[in-house]
Amino acid sequence: MDWVEGVKLSEQEAIERQGLKVLDLVNTGIQCSLRQLLEYGYFHADPHPGNLLATPDGKLAFLDFGMMSETPEEARSAIIGHVVHLVNRDYEAMARDYYALDFLSPDVDVSPIVPALRDFFDDALNYTVSELNFKTLVDGLGNVLYQFPFNVPAYYALILRSLTVLEGLALNADPNFKVLAASYPYFAKRLLTDPNPYLRDALIELLFKDGKF
Image (cartoon, rainbow, N blue to C red; front, side, top):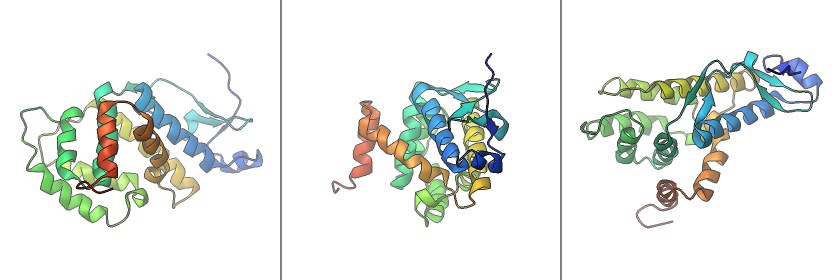
């Protein structure tokens, strides 16, 4: 146990008096959470303002590791691939991702799920993905999931909790903040640098459509 000096992220004025910006710290929190979720596979599932401190030297400190969870290795790549398929509006591939994410057993036919995904996301993606509100996406996807025999693993529920809490923090500081837009650089870096064969294929899928760049 260590004592950490700092100011809770909910105390915006106190943070600004230290010459720091809440949004910069929230952005750091998002990058930290993405690395925990998708690189290390072990993440802080309760990053509310009382568990995140701005230290006097401008760093972000995570506290209280009572609620942690693990992301299975196969699911880490599948989540990144899922984002690529979302950007490309490749709903058939999105539906197949649910096998790797352990949402569906291998004997479930995903073909009826594809039109439901298309109906929701074609409407949601009238905006660019980076402009989407994370909670809107989660709520809409939840409505799709309830129509089919999905099993939502515990780790996924905790991922949603973690990211929606961070988005709430960000929106409190800036109502126009978009978690997905802030996440883009991380996903791009992983796709460009990770030697994982699944992610190599996902990069090609992102860059080429019907053989065209």
